[in-house]
Image (cartoon, rainbow, N blue to C red; front, side):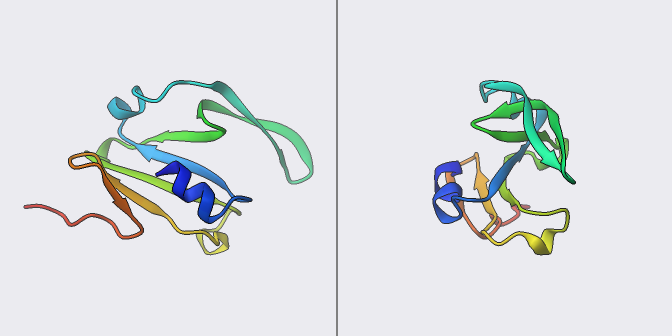
Length: 100
């Protein structure tokens, strides 16, 4: 899923959002991601996997979201957001259906 997102928008940075339990399955490649923010050298600190920040969101259950990070506003993002369903291993640009 991350490969597809990076192929679709190779110049964009991406973040990965999934449950805290599932985030433990991703190796930690670094604990900070150096970035220039508003012209100042700095770094985002946290779980970094393949040059992407990993965000924990307990309410996602079986969902994984890979989204481009281009600006501070969602509308600034140019690439697609990918939604993965851990129950069956599928992903696409539309969220999986909610099962009752």
